[in-house]
Length: 329
Image (tube, rainbow, N blue to C red; front, top):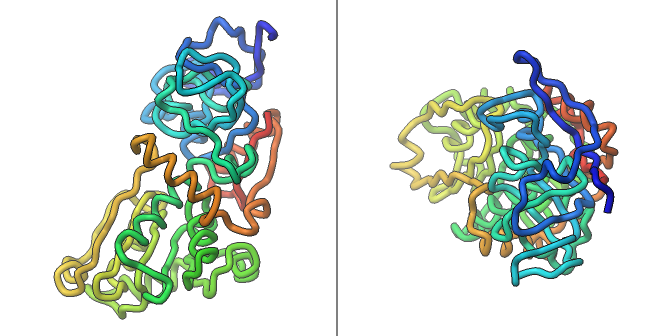
């Protein structure tokens, strides 16, 4: 094994943050239970925040971002795994303050690691990544709350983003009638994600967030943006409807009405994928490998090299990505 490995290193100089692919000495990695040779990682909004120097995500620099990784174990101090095992690591502190998947190697605690499920290739695992895990948890919660395909339409916001697009694709795969909130072309959603209807953000807000209680057009919702969109979804649900929320791209504020909750029994469920118990994460990953795997998963990603990462991170930070970026190491 070489004495160095390639990684996208973010460095701070007098408050200015710059990213560059470097050869990093192995002795700079903080030693943990398991050393993994990364095969693929994926690009998330949180990675873009880390690379831009957001101290709410990453406190100390220099740093290697990448909150997702899949790869093969090189060395291991844990009895749970063996050298050569293919594994997934997402969430916890990976890519935040622990060096992450934008390097060719990561060193992590065994408690963060999930075996790569049968039915998923490493590339497919990172085509999902944290976004897919979050989408899977969101869909899982709708099902556990009693929402079935015959319950009615399910509305998904932020459907051009990672979590939203994967949520829509998963729901369509398992038989739900999906309405996407987005500005993207209808053809993309119908062909790739399998949605039945697309409504613009502006039209949705005008139609459903104007009063304290709106038409009850949807059985459930998955919200990835927050703000007025989430408020409109809450107001437009059936009796005993359910909406999950996992993002704040539009706004971190929620100004809504109490009436959907006390007159329709609506439920709002918060979704976090970072600190979930490992056993629950493994359950969701197994669903993603089987029942939740969309037919056109490969059409939803763009594979890039490490040398293309800086541009991809900038694109994601500005909200200009049209597909998920997967980094091949």
